[in-house]
Image (cartoon, rainbow, N blue to C red; front, side, top):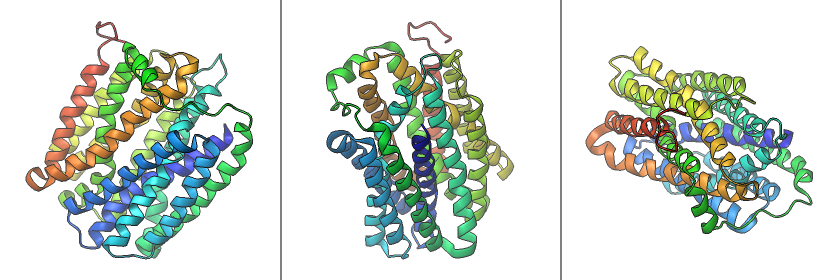
Length: 376
């Protein structure tokens, strides 16, 4: 699991940085929040293209990881040139493709490597690695930004991409001799979605994934516009959020007790967070709402993922992973598109208000047992 841990840390450090940095960078070049949203859409659209290539064409964790990090490194160097809009658009799209290539198989591979007596260990280690990467992402971006500006941030992220290449290269021995992952099967996806536990986990993760890009990409912009934060202060706020998230994820490694209830409570905190950010009359209340987001950020994806994987046969885990990842990938593309449409009329506050409704829906779904009985 060590190479997988390195890959996950490097990848999440890059993705968390880019999701926050790119809209702030676009605004520093003179873009409006709505125009900056176009770059967020390009990032997640590229992510979907990369994920599709990994599952349909490459189907090899080591190859897709090495290729993805090489693409990310090259695109970071392009973005570091402080180019005007057309090259910036291309660089963001290509960076998204690099992000997507290592992702679709990694969580399933680490889950299948778990010991039978501790079935949640693989996803726990994977989740903790994501948490560490999330903490380091805005922290690195903040430190470099203060000294070398946005150009320096992108160059530093190119170095992180090199670390990801090294981890993927070392990990290639762990997948040698394993059967090639299966081609995505719509029949298997349909069979998984007919299972109530899988369907609930899928839907809660889908709704959470609609909110994640809003918090990551517009939280900093919202903090700047409404409460007068600087870009550096926005990075520090995200560092605190992700530090709390990482601590929660680490504390939950190996825990399998009542995951359904954990999912319900996490969705409840997601609703409280979105409402708090939307209605905040001052920056302390806004910061409190962002810190509340660390709880669902830590728990919704890994717990829903665990429930989904445990609800299907072992032979179907990889294909179930494709379907589950699709719930994240599709929402992460759709969310910025909807935000762009809403911002001109409702503003960023209106976007977070819609997010509160989505979060409430996720809570209602998570609060129902698969057989329709409230609770676990």
